[in-house]
Structures are given as C-alpha cells and as structure tokens.
Image 1 (cartoon, protein in one colour):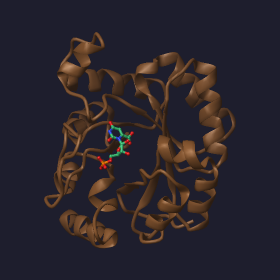
Image 2: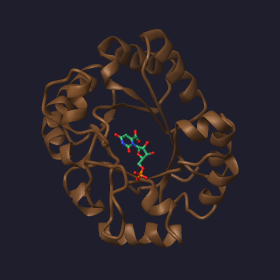
Image 3: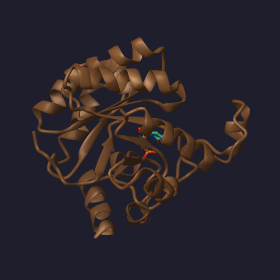
Image 4: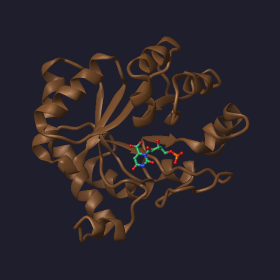
Length: 232
Ligand SMILES: O=C(O)c1cc(=O)[nH]c(=O)n1[C@@H]1O[C@H](COP(=O)(O)O)[C@@H](O)[C@H]1O
C-alpha cells in the first residue's frame, strides 16, 4: 500500500464498482487517498475496498455511522478489520456512542483513524434551526469537535471555515478533514461552506476531501495536479 504525504482525499461518489475503478485507475496512490461513500459501498460492498487496496490506495470509508453505541462500535470494528485507513461516524450520535467506538478499536488494537462528522458542509444556520439546534454553525461545530476529542476520537470532518478555530481548541494533531473544497476553476454545486485548497490548508485543515472538481473534470489527473499547484 502506498503511504502518501498528500493531504488530498478524492471522493469516489459513483454508482458502480466499474465506474469507481475507472476513476481510480486514472489516479495515483502516491498522490492521493480515496474516499468510498454510502452509494458506492451500498452497491458494491467490501469488494470495492479490496479492489482499491489492491491498487495501492489508502481508503477512507465514509459511512457516517449514527446508531446505538454497541451497533456503531461493531460497525467501526468491521470497517477497521477490512483495513481501511479512516472511518467516520456522526458526532451528534453522542458521547456514549463515540466512546464505545473508540474503545472497541483500542480493545482490538486496530489503528484505523476514527473521526466524527460535526455539521455537514451542505448545512447553514437555517438547516440547524430546522432540526432544533439554535446555535451558530461555528458554535455547534466547536461543541461537537470538543465532544469528539473528549470521547477519544482522532479528529473531525468539518468545513475549512472552522479549521482555524478547531486547531486552537483541539490542537494541530487533531485531524481536521475538510470537504467543501473548491479550487478556483470549479463550481460550488450543493456545498454551502466552501474554501479553496490553499486557503483550507492555511486555515489548519490536515486533509482535504475533493469530489466533483476532480472526478467530473475532463482530465482528472490534470485537475488533481492543478490542485497540487494551488497548494505549493
Ligand atoms: O464526510 C464527508 O466526507 C462529508 C462531510 C460533509 O460535511 N460534507 C461533504 O461534502 N462530505 C463528503 O465530501 C464529498 C464532497 O464532494 P464534492 O462536493 O463533490 O467535492 C462528498 O463525498 C460528501 O459526501
């Protein structure tokens, strides 16, 4: 497996194993990691993990678990046993759920990174209000990130707009995985809280999740290189 220093994680949001592998084959495991999400995993199952690992990629399994503590701990264990580099859950599932998941990994001596989604990058303050949360987005992100840290998680998914604040509250070592990344050449699509790759790294992101700006580009590896250029 290639161990890359790159902060880039490319989101393979595809409806089939073939389509995902077709994209993976255009990318280089020494220059990025790959993210497998709900659609692809639901359609292809663990076969996609095997295929990507076989091609040398480290994989972030993005299934955003949210359930009772025992169920989430078992799901996280199952993911880690398949050798994924990173797995996530929703911080809003609460302290007991996060502690159970972190404890299970430690008990089984599994080294997969476990991170928590704070507030989705597609959400703004009115979306929080709809679900009964009357806080500023940044306050809610901070609350959930601190809870995740206290619960033994390795980091969070948040927007880059919150990364600086989290670096000072949770430390530089605490992972800040930030989607909603839009290079100068790309459209925002459905993302609300966005930032360019360079600004996101300067703000304290440790990893950048990039989907459509690379996967829908005519030449994905060129788009990836353009993002690398923006980072130097
Ligand atoms: O957990 C995630 O990866 C995630 C969390 C979040 O708050 N926002 C978010 O966009 N994501 C994921 O990041 C990717 C972003 O893709 P693009 O918007 O195409 O760059 C998608 O796979 C989303 O599922």
